[in-house]
Length: 474
Image (cartoon, rainbow, N blue to C red; front, side):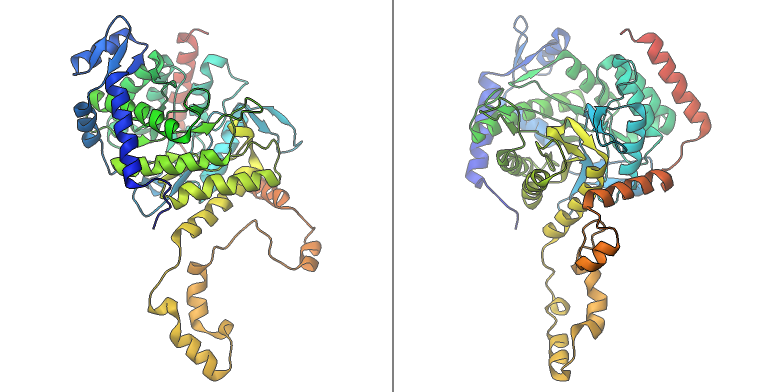
């Protein structure tokens, strides 16, 4: 039984309110040619104002044509992600600007080496299933940072990753890089990347976003429609109102994708956060987790795979606030049945990444998976026979085969959490979890070997990057 904050009637009211907004208000499209395309596709448009009003029947048709079974393919097939109702997948934060240095512990701008290292760590962590452009390399030319990031990611993971570009111009070079690895036909059949497309709240799509969506659908690349409303600033202060607005933006995005390429995979991926009225800052408040639950319910209503805020915090350091906020932001949407949870590695509302937190989050996700699994219930699990045996023999359960056969599946076995007696903990160096996580990160960086790329393909990718640097103007 999944956690629900909305009744079925309330979900349907949000749907009808969203449809009303799309029909009566519509969305603003900042691309004249794309507005004309929508007009030719049955959307009521005002060409002068670039506003598109989408009829309910067309929205319904496009929802129905969106695949309900979605696979995110990976360069290493063992990391393919197949979304269904029985498992939660996870990924890191994307697009952070800075990192906490692993050696000094100070905050600094991220570099190409950070892109490589963080990607390599994610590749090694079992509870983080896909990756992202976790950080952008500040030591690369600003207009080429997305391209340099993709180059580094390709060489350091076999997992699927989000390759959302800055612009459509850079996207064409990213596509070339992926095709160098997979081939043009395989990219279309089994794309190893996904792309995020974010409406601008309230109810707008930029020219860059529509162009990126157009190019992605030509290659049948899965698109995560990613509304990012800030409740109280770019969306209503009420949680229900923000859910309505983001859902209207989401349905507009789904419709656009299906009009571009019917059957193109789409992920329901909102990022709803509240505005702190005291500080004027976006915050990882409990309301974000509550809205994530509502978004998961809406995705389930449409039969679409969901990806929502998972682990998040406003803390600037790895402290008790991190633990409190990550527990609430991760566990609630997981219990609601989210297909994917985001945020691994982030602190400071996603602005900063911590190497140690990335490793700790792998463990947090493991605990969340165990919580969602719940209690297995059959005759063997009820354990009447073994209870009877131990009671009659005045024995104990540690001696029983039943314990040996079941403890690993019943219990989550942590790698970082410390459960030893104080005396042993002191003999082991009295290390904090952060210190143990740092050791784990260093071990991964020293020993883990991602699936390699052929040297000739590496050279081809390098040539594509060089061509992009010459072609794209700063």
